[in-house]
Length: 219
Image (tube, rainbow, N blue to C red; front, side, top):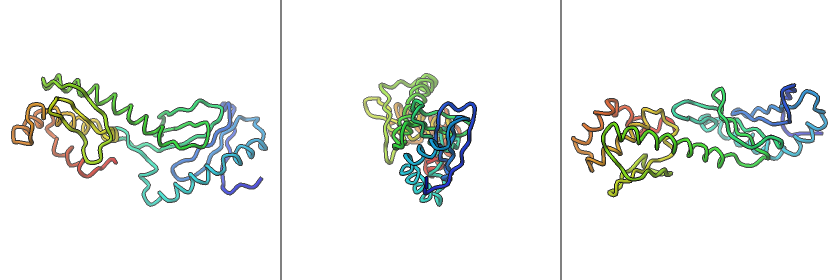
């Protein structure tokens, strides 16, 4: 059976079913149970061939911008690895600096990845805002997590705080700066001298953190 791509087969006694892995460089690894027939491996690959070729093409286009094949979570770099396994429950896990996305079929993984990042951001921002608000003795109403094009955070006149979920790409100390910044607006509505003094009280390195956001170092 002729295929339009090269691949490596790894048979393992630990494997319970067949799966395809495509790494950030477009290399294909097929993992199968030790006694799994080669004929069935070929049949499985033929079924998944359109998806494999599409993903390889995407990777080829992104080789110039290698960061597109990687992702930052809390400032740590992870490689994105997509596995197609019809017999394994779909899911997403993190292991050995890899974000491993398991799918039943060759569908897009972007929605699944974005949902994971949003949930991770929501949990961290909600918990950390409560902690920092208590430390600064500043209250607020509600927290909203959004996808904003030009803002990392905002504070409404009603006392609601909104944060960009893409902050999840940045190290905790930079995320904390944004939280402190928005909490400070609950006392100082503008960016006056008093405002920055309040921010500096709880984040002495705020200028460095502000600059990292401006340069979008982890996007």
